[in-house]
Length: 323
Image (cartoon, rainbow, N blue to C red; front, side, top):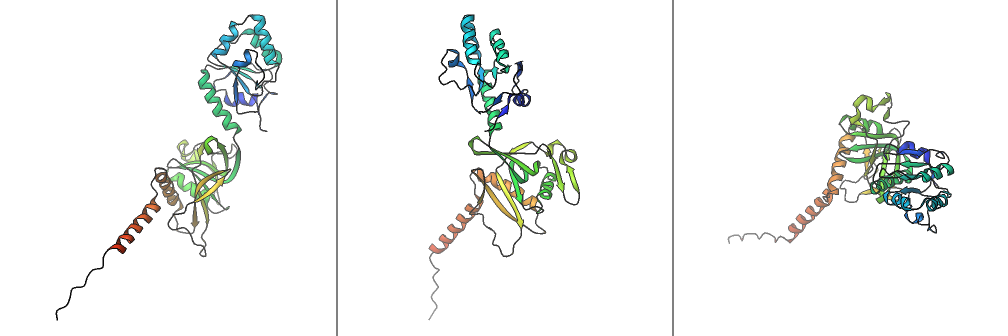
């Protein structure tokens, strides 16, 4: 089971989620183990039968106002019972100031306590996205990921086939590099595959015969991006004269990552083929297909109609010759 230490969570998300620590004790040995979160509303009333203590806990404006309505002995008793569970951490939203006895109990049990000015509903949405990304299934693939005309294209192929050289040509044509050589892929909700770069390699690229180059330094920040949704796969392979390659595109192939099928084109490589232009056209054609225009099928339907019209046309009658 994947888990994230509260300290790691705070360091990574403090700016994104606008978190400020009130109680920092326990951050190193407390862990978030679930993508789900919990608002402590029912638990504050004393109903603990289904209390999901293992989740990140949220106290919003309603919960804080409810705690303030309680008499100090009653509030202290409830908080003592709640915080005796091994909670990962507590976040108080909406600029609310937590009661002093909540802070005291958190310090006593070494439960990290944070505040944020973000309203509760918005914070729940933002932290759900963050946790979903952190807990998403992930894998690594040897390949190159590019952003071509807004389409995330994963370029695959055997080592030395020319993936990096093709990517460099695309960067030269004002497209953006996401990752080269090693692509990190996460499967998010709604079957979205999000690709990103390695922190070690970052936006470097290996060009055989030239060495390691830094795309950001050479071409500027406009030539890179940190992550991109994968929508199309291009597989490069050496041209095989004995193999019959698809010439119409009526039966598109797919490439499976996790349980998600991604449209794929198999592009044979041989001298003289401009791979960068082919990939650009593949990206534009993919955008057309998303809009409902399938070029190959439209062409096939047009040919079928013309053949049907030719078949149904009556034969021309010959003029009778004079006797």
